[in-house]
Image (cartoon, rainbow, N blue to C red; front, top):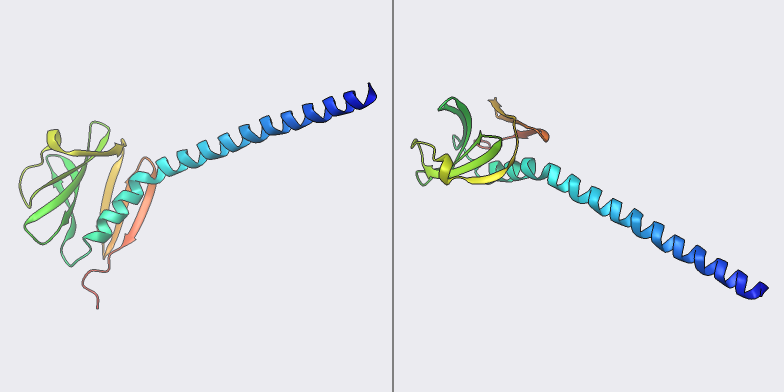
Length: 140
């Protein structure tokens, strides 16, 4: 009886350890995915800016009463990133043409979108935080 009791106690302890370990692992993975989702917009914007980092190809415009981050590709077309109705949108079209928010791709949800370009430093602020990028365009 004593041996069966000790074995049952050991088995119960082992099962509790597995259950608590599984819960801890699940919470850790959910936290990691949440953190990745939180940084996704700023990471995307940083990658998009770096891909178009050439002299006079990255600039900020005020169009239709909103700030627009313009990333030209040298072919007469540009990727225009702007915020509308709580969504950060990207629109690809001819440089200087009107924005097409109804045809734009959704990057992600954000209420805040503030972009400033000063002396080769681009500061992008969204609900997720602030990203500061130093443009290398025009440098040898």
